[in-house]
Length: 111
Length: 116
Image (cartoon, rainbow over all chains, first blue to last red; front, side, top):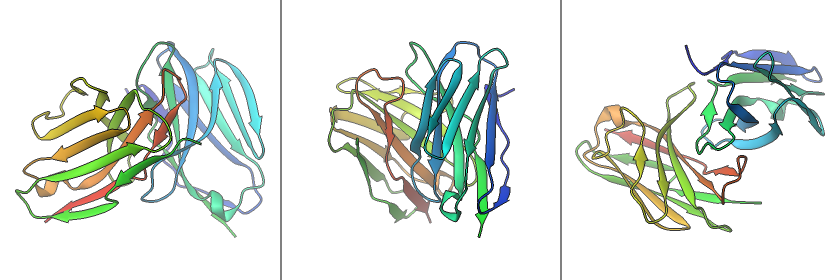
C-alpha cells in the first residue's frame, strides 16, 4: 500500500464547475500538506500549503485537511481551461526532509 | 519568488554516452536539492537528496554509480547519467529548498532525456 493515494483521473469538468480533488494517506506523522500543479512537460508549482488540520483559502482555491481521517482535499472554484493540468498532493513530516507525493490527478476543464 | 533553473530542457544522446543535467537556484541559496524521475502519467519518484558539500543520499534501488550527483555550491547541483541506455529515457526534475522550511521546495522545469 502506498503512503499517499490519489485517484489518477482524468477528471473532466465543464468550464465554471468546481473541481474537487483529494488524497488519502496512511502515515499519521505527516504534518505539512501541499498541493502542486504540473503542466505537461513542466516542473510542479506550489499552489497551496497547510499545516495540520483545517481549511485554507486563496482566491479560487481551497485546501482542507482532516488529520483524523487522514484525508486532504483541494477545491477549485470557477474552473478555467487554463486549470487543465495534473494536480499532485504532497506531504512532509514535521522534522522530515523529503516530500512524499501522491500519484497525481489529471484534470481537464472543457470550454 | 524563488526560481530554479534546470538545463537542458531536452536532450537526446546515444546509448553508452553520459549526459549532465544542471540545476541552479537563481535567487536563493539551496541548502538541499532533490532529484526526481517521472515516467509518463506517473508521479515523481525521488532519486536522491543532496546537501551542499556532502555526498548525496540515494533512495533504495537507485544506482549511485549510474546517476552521479554533485552539489558543489549552494546554488548548483548536477545530475550525470553515465553510460546511458534507452531505459534511462525519462523526465528528470530537480527541486531546491532554502533553509528548513517544510514548504519551501521550488522545482525546476524538468529535463526530458531520450537515449537512442
